[in-house]
Image 1 (cartoon, helix red, strand yellow):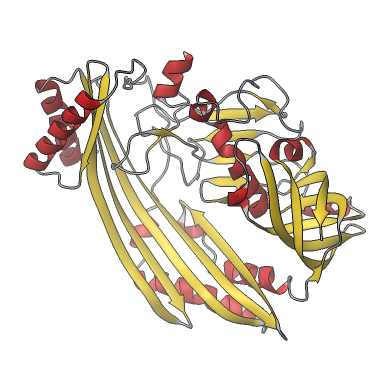
Image 2 (tube, helix red, strand yellow; image 1 turned 120 degrees about the vertical axis):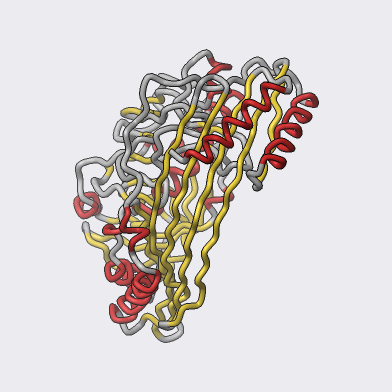
Length: 446
């Protein structure tokens, strides 16, 4: 527990109650982030950033006000409390705005690996250099390393409210990513690799360098594809991007506002029986794991889709009060500068039992998608999409040759309904993850 931050937060809550608030909450967070970028064996960026501050929410006559400050001195805290109260007076009353009460227990999570901090900056620079060298050594056709980077960060959160809540946690993460270009003749292709983890020992710069080189070189000499209906296999990175399209629709806030394509479908079949979608703020090793959310509600494992059937939505305190249910612990805060919104934590498609090779081996002719373009253009309310795609053509159960200049179109719900295989290779890209998935048939345009 950060005793000083706890004292500041308690003081802010006390001042708010003294000056007329019925309830109050103080949320203090501090973070330190390191970013190292190497290019051609030279350090191009070395950045250390710190951010600290407090957000204060006050509740008065059914109205809510919010303010924040980056100065935790007495005068600045008093000013923030005063501003929050002034903002509350201008707000509309809403009986569903409530604060969390202390829970019987909170998840016991291991979120801090001391070796992240113990490793010297020089060693971290050398890891980025090693990743760059490994990519170049993997294939002579790797021509440009756009970025070879190492990142880490530490964060601490203190939350105090007038309902008797006093909470604290600290955690750290680390990660590496590389982007590069491979060329042959006049053809050039890009490749990348990334890994983020709570454990420093999980980072393997040599493996990441080789992976990025392979992603680029396997696409050299890509041919244009032919318009047809065929089975489509999405590699984990692409499947994770597609899962991201569905995330807004699984928010209770979107459902309550009529902006979710899943509204009114709890208990109904919304995907193939092969699909299980989970949000788990308690996931061991999960980059978004925490013992409590941005409102002090214990995080939890929430099964959203089970065997293709919609089980429910993600809630914070506000949406759960409106629906008369319990919060799922998904009151997410980007920082002390904002109020809790409904958001995902560790959000993923549960892995199946088949390897990616087994999934591909069953296909006589089809597409293995390694990249899609235009995910941001998909309609989150209707679920319709039309995406540029490239990848590797499958022939007789083997990856045969690279193809590009394709388009795949459809609807996210129809696509999930046609999933007939889910791989055992769940991979996370930050707080979202998916295994290889196979869609029995899709429209592919050349």
